[in-house]
Length: 432
Ligand SMILES: NC(=O)c1ccc[n+]([C@@H]2O[C@H](COP(=O)([O-])OP(=O)(O)OC[C@H]3O[C@@H](n4cnc5c(N)ncnc54)[C@H](O)[C@@H]3O)[C@@H](O)[C@H]2O)c1
Image (tube, rainbow, N blue to C red; front, top):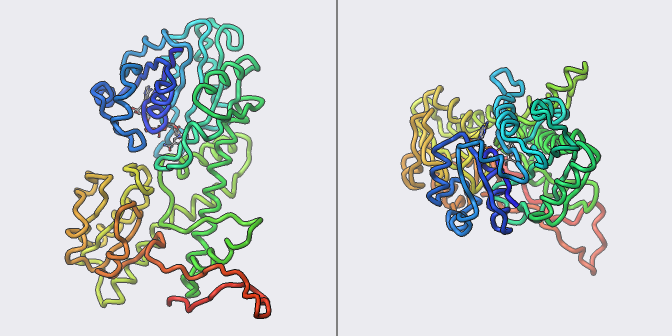
């Protein structure tokens, strides 16, 4: 088969490589000519795809900006960004643009799949009319489905191949075609009744995470005020083998998905006079979490009799999650912005992010970042960094809990002693 991929980013490039590795031909289209040139010279810009892996299949992948090449494909998969506008409304420009170029190239018999995360109804209400302007009819002349991407950049266990793929076809024939195509690269497909179910399932997954992260972030702030170690609380609660799922507090939410996608649903809900209160509340809590981090940095300086103005602050990790260089919506940016505006001198260490142009900053070595620092902030804990060494060198605020000693150690009950009445944990003193 020939598979067309529109948008060769975090989602599209791994997909292109997976199809190529499965022996299919891939036509990858992107509006970013720089990226296309990089791919043509065998250079990957996505951490999960090492350049060697790309080079091994480069004879199967044609990277191009020429959208008419899509007319050669058996299936076309759209993986373009779905951000929010400045007013936090869905920005469907890239998606509509992609649907238009697919429409221009559309041939009878082709399958078109949308993977970009979006609100329920997008495939049917926005993409379908553009494709049917050609005079071809979905379900009869061409096939249309929605299949949400579930890629988790940096995850070494779950990848495209072993993560079940949800598929919602516009008609049963559309679903069957999409199942056959994804069956080439995915161990398990999960067919659902229609595109709207598939669209909303993806949003449910992200909203579930957003709400739970907000819950634990809010409790972390309360625990801080009560001088209770929230991570010890979570360790203890997580010993329950049923009915509890662990979420850890952090500096706030980042990335393209969690801070953005839930608002696609709340925007759509407003059309129906429906207020999605959990989504709004979770967004509010998570968006304010970086300010709590700033407050903690201020406190760490205050403990030394210092003010933010004139202090040197080392920020460790500016990407939004470990082992990736993605800074979209990263809470580090808000933290740096606030601390800079309060007069701090910032040095940052993040081997995945060479520079932060907006702040006039470049990545420095760990030693340079820590040299003369009044406080270090662990915002994202990348692998391979000795955070214990950081904490031993400079007063450190650890937003990820990587320098903390495990307090709660699950033990089997001692058989020669009466079983404890409440829990079998060694509860040690809580750090004030
Ligand atoms: N990154 C993730 O972890 C992730 C996970 C699940 C779902 N998603 C969803 O997948 C979609 C894509 O996200 P991403 O992270 O891959 O984005 P990305 O920014 O990494 O890549 C998108 C690519 O599309 C290109 N592009 C933009 N408009 C285009 C157009 N009209 N035609 C052709 N190419 C175009 C861009 O140049 C870019 O290379 C989004 O809807 C996102 O919410 C992302």
